[in-house]
Image (cartoon, rainbow over all chains, first blue to last red; front, side, top):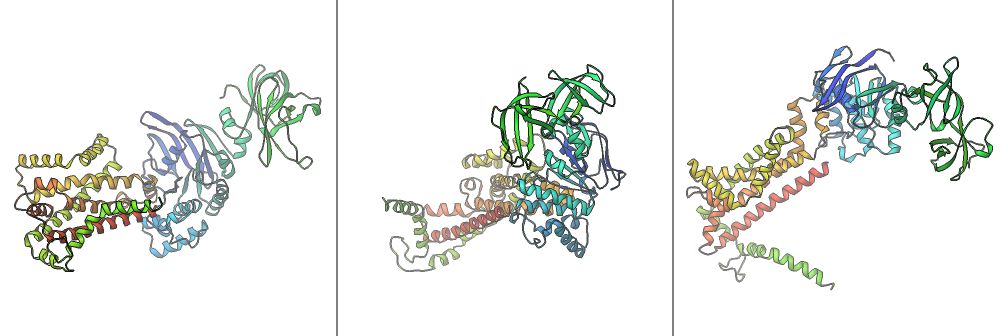
Length: 366
Length: 257
């Protein structure tokens, strides 16, 4: 994979009527990467996709693809193709004609069309479906046809608009792997838009988290999950326990002592902080350590009680209310020593975490 | 009680269809008076064929119906496409105006047309009939085609555009084939509405151009001739064929989506 900028937005602004969707928005997507735009509904992610596809034109700024400003090029002349959430297959055409549509429009000769349709069908593993009509297919099959119809044109960028959200859980997971396989096989840049964080983490090379038309964080799934830059990202990606803390002492090497709920904790950050500065300490539910109160070691820890326990199959997810009233969510994997492990409601527990697993962000960032 | 239900259903159907059955039977009855069955015969159909006045009126009616159907379908389809595709001021007003036209009593329309034709100095006859028929058929076409357009996934048009189709290709390859069933249904609807109409036609037709329903109406004033039975049977067959074709088209359309 080359790391060159392939598709970029240079201070793009877009408004609909009175609502500003994007303001001087910048974005760089590399050649051949699986890039995901993740955000809540109404955050502007679909607008970004439509600006790349050419269904919308930017009010200001430019959209550059492979060195060419495509900002005002109409959709039919752009080397991009879209897979729509609703599939948008042509209902009156056979699967063959649906997939062949793009090639027919660009005047490719019949023999080549035939060969490439068969190739595309085999990429999405739908060999032999040529003569069916869209209404005879299941949701997952329609999705594959929509993908085949888009990739047959060998677009420079394939755009996917919440393409898997209409499928059921099992099928969605299967299609996630399928999409990754197709992307590796064809080596096309994929831009995927979703509000589903799990999908984003599973499939992407890089993820852009966006809210209210503002880029929040851009990075690999691991960076996004483990080192969120602000509270929005921490809350939007996965579950988070957020502790309000105050730096009481600066040690060397980004090590600090911080006060959380009256206890002194040693924390490690990747920023410089000053004494008395307020910070947020973020811990994922699976990073907290919980023990029965009576078994607690002689270490600092919070004391509370179990107020809810949910068995999810893989994990035991519990809600703890600390004695100071704060609520924590924890998630524990079963281990081989104690496969029947469970809690009773109102069980007294003791919570802390392994030093270094915490993630610290500035308090003034939302 | 178990016998009551089928009995009830049978009586309802008898009430609805007995008159038609009597009419069809009588059209094949040799007897001039329909009180008793004499023998099977095509006599009345032959007589009808030789009745030039009635046959002329029949041809006139078909001519008007076919022309009305074509023109109303073309205009109505274009109008539906415009309402669907473009945003313009008074778009809602244009939509409601169509409903007003569709809901207003025939007699009101009839009088309106008559006044307009007289005011404009248009002679009552072929043209006045054609214009009036196109006008009252138009909303039915617009609404049939528009409701089909509205049922589409908006993304289909964007998908076609995304795959490189130009405006004109999108229309000829995507939109038109998808609305074709509705367009045909609109055509047949207009055809039957035009063929059926008595009230408006009786106001706007003149002595030079007589159409079937009015001719029949004036004939029955002096007593029902069995030729009329034959004619009614033929019309019934035409209408039933049209309705069957429409419902088949609609059924096919639904199975497609």
